[in-house]
Image 1 (cartoon, rainbow, N blue to C red):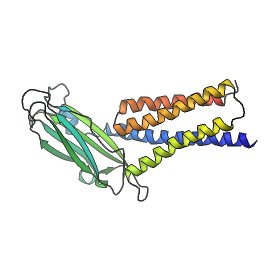
Image 2: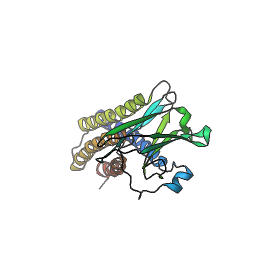
Image 3: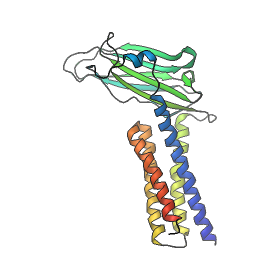
Image 4: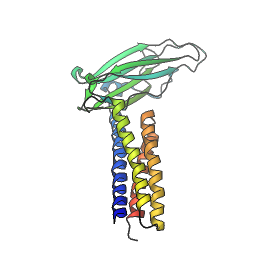
Length: 250
């Protein structure tokens, strides 16, 4: 009876830890999806992705979570793939509720052949929108007189957990999730009374789900949002598969 109770507690710990990891990944993806709609009306009207632009953007690097009292850095690289100098313009827009919802910064670059420049900006709680998000959108223009033709965006979650900063919040949530899932698997495996094929198969899925959750967190931190979306869907499917294999009466 004691072994059965511990194995059940192990499964409960695994489920709660999985839900914690899922929540962290889901809100990160949701913030990025919310950021897709962050446009100024004139930008929507003038943006034209068919316009040839000599420069190239890298990925927009943004923090996933930031504390309410923090100042975080947002940065992007601009590359000149041509064999001649170029002078592109970079326009960055930030959520700014106290200034008609948009704060805009413009900068001209002078890049030699094959040269790369990195531009950075600071975001704080002054950029907070909807009491939980900071949005950033960056445009690349061929010249000052051209409309924007390349854009990158991101959404940052602002969380208030006392004195914890964004990195500490992520570390605590992701560490608790993965560690809890591992301990839950070990308890379930060690104290489970039966060893029927269905439970053995369920243990394999639980192990895979732990790895997928960790990879999903890493993908979100790296800004690989397409991969993060796919992994989140896979997480849901594997979570359902665990219940079918472990708890089904069939």
